[in-house]
Amino acid sequence: GKPLQESLGEVTYSASFLEWFSEEARRIYGDIVPSSANNRKVLLLKQPVGVASIITPLADQAGIPPGVVNVVPCSRDRTPSVGQVLCSDPLVAKISFTGSTATGKVLLKMAADTVKRVSMELGGHAPFIVFNSADVGKAVGGAMASKFRNSGQTCVCSNRFLVQSGIYDRFVDQLSRAMDSELRLGHGSKPDTTLGPLINSRAAEKVVHQISDAVSQGATVLKGGKRLDGSFMQPTLLAGVTTNMLCMKEETFGPLVPIIKFETEEEALAIANGTDVGLAGYFYSQDVGQIWRVAEALEVGMVGVNEGLVSTPEAAFGGIKQSGLGREGSMYGVHEYLEVKYMCFGGLKP
Figure 1 (cartoon, helix red, strand yellow):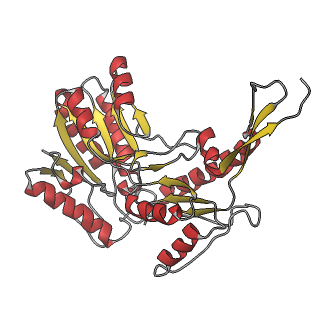
Figure 2: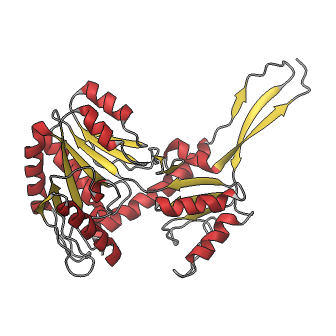
C-alpha cells in the first residue's frame, strides 16, 4: 500500500548503498605505525570479517555478482528457527540486523555464544523540537517530511513534537493547514496518494490505542484521530500532550503528531533525552549558539538541524543507547565488516 513515488524513492535509496560501498572498497586503507624499535615495522591491515548474516528487507536481481548475496527465504512460522541458525552457526562471523529493539536484544544473546561481531539498527523515538527563533514555515515543512514519510513507519520518523510557547500557536495552526493541503490517503498506485495504509491491523490498533490513552489523560484531537477501513489511519494531530502519555513513551510507527508545549531549552532537552533509545533527533532554531548547544546535548546518533530528512549513504547512520550498535553508510560503515590485523615485521637492519 505504500505510495508508488515513495516506493521508487526507497529503491533508489537502497541502490545508493550498493554504489557507495562498492566505491568504498577501494578506500579501505591500512596504517603504517612508527615503531619504538628501529629494527621493526608496525603495520595494521584491514581484512574482511567473513560471512555476514544480514537480517533486513532485501532484493535480489540487482546485478550483484553470484554468491555475494545469498537470500535465505523462509515462512513466517520458521523465521525464529532460521534466525537462530544464522546467529549461532560458527561459520557466520558477523550479524547485521534492522528492526525492533526487542528483537535486536534476542539476536544479541544468540550472537554472544560464538562472540560474533554485530551491527544493530534498532528502534527510535525521535524528538522534533521547534524553538522560538525557528523559521516556523520551514519547521512545518520539516515536520511534514519527517513525520509522514511512509505514513510514519520508519525508525527515524519524528514521534515526539516539542514546540516552544512563543511560536506554539503559529506552528500548530500552520501544521494543521499543511496536513489538510498536502496529505491524501488512497491507493498506492494513484499519483496523488501521499499516505497508504499501515503495515497491518496490529499497527493501526497501536496508533488508536495511543490516541485513546492520550485523550483519556486530557489531550485534544485537533485533526483526524480515527481508524478507517482496513489498516488505514487518519493523520492525527494532538494538542495538550504530556510526558506521561503512551505516545511519549513508546515509538508510534504511524501518522500521529503529539505536541508538547515547553518553555525553556533545558526543559526541551530533558524531555527529548528522557528515553532509553536514541536514534535520530531534529530541531529548528536560528540561534547559532543554541544550535551548537542542543546538537551536542541531544542523546541521539543523528541530528537534523533545520532539516527533517537526514538519511544519505555518505553519512554515518546509527543510534546510541538502545537504538543499536555500529553505523551504516559513510566511511565508517565499511569498518563494521572489517577486522584490524596487527603485523609486526621484525629482524630488519636498522
